[in-house]
Image 1 (cartoon, helix red, strand yellow):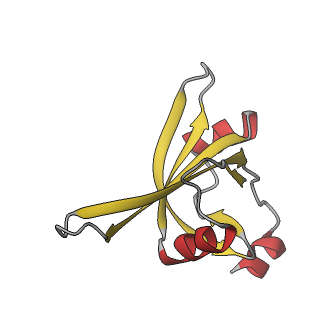
Image 2 (cartoon, rainbow, N blue to C red; image 1 turned 90 degrees about the vertical axis):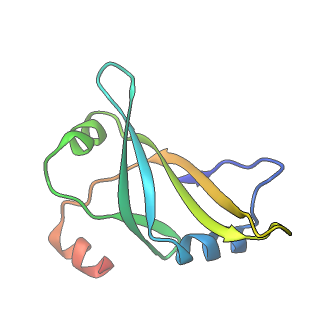
Length: 110
């Protein structure tokens, strides 16, 4: 997946540091009728890639097998406001999901 760049974008190092600190994101896949399907998921960042663990069946798996396009959003809460109001930082990553079916490949990533 790739991160979209805009004027508020984090540097590559800031993005990796942010993703390493957090562990939950929102996965969006494409339904058959082209509407989004969104679900929260735990993730791990390894070697610059995001890995999600899930069962072998289900709505998101069916969607990914049919259409690998997806987005993954991560949100982190922090305090930076002078009034100590909670602020947040987020990253939206767009790309294509790959289902790892090979048991050996999965074990190498754990």
